[in-house]
Image (cartoon, rainbow over all chains, first blue to last red; front, side):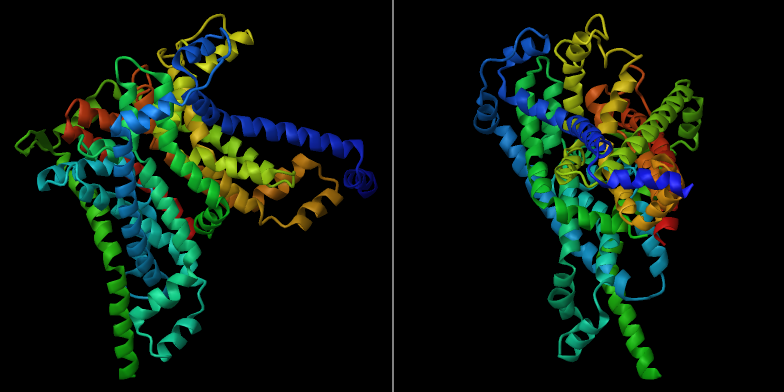
Length: 292
Length: 292
């Protein structure tokens, strides 16, 4: 058995036709995979810079567009002011929720990681299990509550929902990062006169920076891209960007290239963030998601 | 001893204080609505401009769920959606993970690309696919028509025989990244010498994959499957933008929204939402086993 297998394995190792074929088929698969992932995004981007009428002709297979235009972006950014306002709204509550969720979740996660206390297990298990909760199911009672206490369609209402929603997740994600910090470091800081509270911003958080960063990005992107809570908890005064984009489709006359431009604006920030921080983000997420 | 005990309780108090924000937010955003939706499910609820009015009706709403004639069909469709979604996403993400685990040049680029569907708001992703599936100028029609696969442009989303599968395709695209990262992280932990050993013993690529790799990543695969099932049970944004549940695409989760905000049957919607929450929560207990 060994003798029949060994020629095969050695021939793989040197640059033989077999190896080259393996590589070429690898790149064909690579190419197909990349097209599948990138194409819808690319198509949307192209749609946003092609004039509406040539876009329709292109879809009908009656000729390629001859010009490109930035008209749709001009209109979205400078004419229809609601788009920029909506982006500003979304940015505001996304950042607010991220800050609260990361601060509360981090110190909660630190408590889970560092201390053993009665009720720890139950609480931790609840934090893990609740993460999968379907937003819509929990949104109904919260919607009625917010209507009654006047938080419906307000920034603090949205921030309350989102930060609460992601705090347990951050706590859970951060545990792994905190457990990596040597206890000696914290003890010696306390010996040097640092208070229990003081060790958290001075020692603990800087050492768990990778986790703080990954969870902040995760929460921000989740809140930015959320639609369910946006559509349920707002009513026109505050306009989440996803709700603004969705509204275009229900109009009587759908302008595809303008819709594409708004969509590109809605996904631009997430794509930039992912593009810039890809490595750190994946490392953080994988550390959190696969620590088992 | 007393000294030790005092410091122990101090530490307990400190750990509870650290957990307080997380705990309060968890109660407010998760615990409250979970309890409240059971109570709401036994009431008739009217939302008027003056406020919310409640009327106790007992188990009427629960009975109406089981008496609803459309329910078997909705349940069947939900199962269909989840099963096809899970199989397709699992196979594709396994494929992507294996591809990303190779040492092809430029694989880092594909890894960044892979995060795009995850980072793009699902509502915007739904819009992309809505447009690709458009009946008059959708690219899907153009390509299939030019390839001679279809005789004329199809109304993919407006036709009950194709609408569901169109939404499924869009959702597959959106859901691939996370399971891929989970499986990829597991693949990188598979020791190369085990695979080499198997190939010395004469195992071919397929045998090595089935008998060496799969058993080693079994837990992560299971985790990925549960993640996909939960993700597909919670399909909302895509349905909202692509079909709104028309054309035989209504699934249980979306029915919660439709009942609550279109038919204004909050009580029945709460009951259904609570059932959805329970079934997902039951599945998330697996997470607990995995992360313990």
